[in-house]
Length: 299
Image (cartoon, rainbow, N blue to C red; front, top):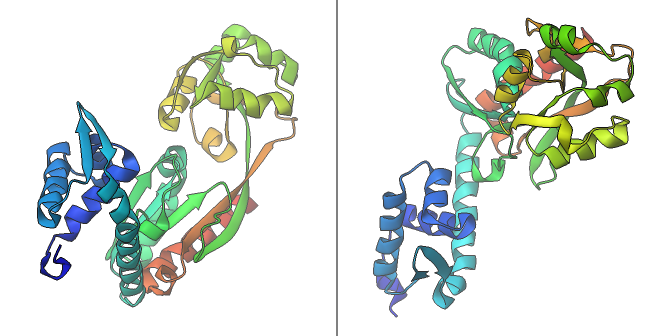
């Protein structure tokens, strides 16, 4: 094979890599923000350009071919180099304008980010902010976000991470719901109430049982992986849930339960790539986020 004569589009390589990592054309399309036919055409075009078969197609399933497996490490090296180039280029920008992507959990994105976004708009009105509301940890090194707000300390290399506050949470329920079922006076009493699950019921039970809350799967009759939807279910009286105190305090119609209990505590970390942090727009947003969450914790 004459590799020097081969020419292909980088988008085709990205489509191939995303298909391998996500497991299908449809999943790769979602990850890339494209349509499934577009991803399929890009992979087919790459196969044609290279003169090889990258995937064995059996029905609707895809299996990486031997040649595809051999090329995979090289493609990943190319992706890492491309990401590094993008990071360095972004880091050299000294203009307080352009796009900054902030990723945070959906509840934090909806309820806690807007006040600091107002501050950012006032300080740098030419900035554009894209809030990536997701409960999944986004990869800053792949430029899925410029700044991440997380509740676990980031461990990826080349990241700058800052612990900005330790948030607290209590149990909350709608006042109308508690008027109907009663207000328990201790953790044991919570076992008689309905809970709204935030994501996996097993994970919630695994979190609550060690804290002394005797819940069972039967307590969870409704829930959602989307935190905003789950919180709205609580507000409308479907049950109770542990929630950040800042969010509980700003939501009409709900009340904090067991106010004398020791609150749940969890850290709030900011993270960005070391190369990105040299860009004025990234550093400005990072510092304003740190200042805002630090002050909120002191109120």
